[in-house]
Image (tube, rainbow, N blue to C red):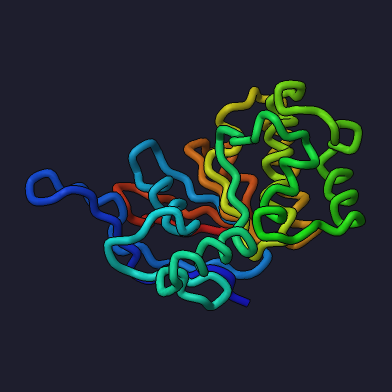
Length: 225
C-alpha cells in the first residue's frame, strides 16, 4: 500500500535573476514498510524536500499525498493535527525540551494532541530505545546518542504512517551513528515502520533497501539493493 506520493513537486525561492529552483518537478512514491534514503550533497534540495513532505513548508507547485490525503489541500489547523498524528519527524539536532524528562519529551506530541499514551505502548517503546532506566533524566543528563533516541521515541509515540529523518546521525560520533542506524533498521524490519531518511553519507544511505539520489533539485537515480 502506498504511504507517500509526490507529484511534480517544485519549490522556488526569489524572483527574476535571483530566483533559485530548490526542487524541480520531483515525483516518486513510497510503499508501506519501505526504508528509503535520499542521498545528496549540501544544496541538492534534500532538506527542502523533507520540509515539504513534513508539511512545514509549502511548494510553489505540485502535490504531496500521505496516506492518500493531499496535505496541502488541508486547512492549517487540520494539517497541524495531521502532522502530529501521521508524520514523525527526526532532526540532526534533537530539539528536546530541556526542562522535560525523557518520558515527558517522548509523550509531548500526544499531550499537544490532548491524548495520553498507553502505558504498555510507552514501556515497550522505552525498552526498544534502551531508555527504560533513563525515564526521569533530563536531556542535559544524557549522551548525544541517548538524546537522539528520545527524539526517535517522540517521533514514534503516535504510531505515525511515516517517519521523516533529516541527517539523524549528523551530530553523533561513529559509534552512536552505527547504533542509531541499527535502530532504524530494526524499526523497519521488525516493526514495519515506513522510513524516509535524508543523508549526504553514502555509507549511511546503503543501510536502506532503496536509495533515491538527488542533485540540483531533481531525483536522478532510484535504486534498490
